[in-house]
Image (tube, rainbow, N blue to C red):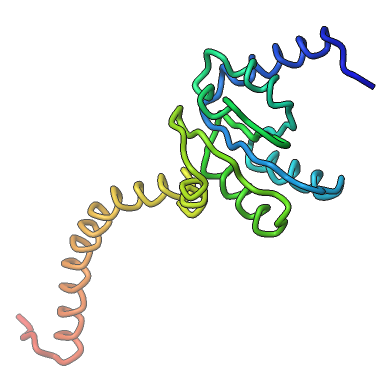
Length: 177
């Protein structure tokens, strides 16, 4: 059953609204993907805070006009699906890369991160990076480490003095006054 022009216009407008607010997109293709496999992919992407949609190439190109992802959605061919997020692009790339390794029917075409077009190799490199939360926790640890070392050193002086005095008392090194 063919899709009406009004329905296509509605799809373009909805996708256009989503694409205006995002700057992280991965464009992919697939062959012979089952419903169960598609469900697993969508579930994994929801867990990463991303959305996934299968789109017609011409509708995707029209919806992307005037957005940061316009360059990636031009001149597409074959079956096309897009995954996009406003959140952490690393989490989305990790979910997609893991799925692509498990399902050889699913492959990447191109991606956009923070408005910059990236290749398939860069998508895989992005997936191997630590997530934003991991980077922030490491940074906070590095910021906190010098203060921890200072406190440990300051406490060590008092503790060491107490140990020396205690050993002197036990060995009767002090004279009674």
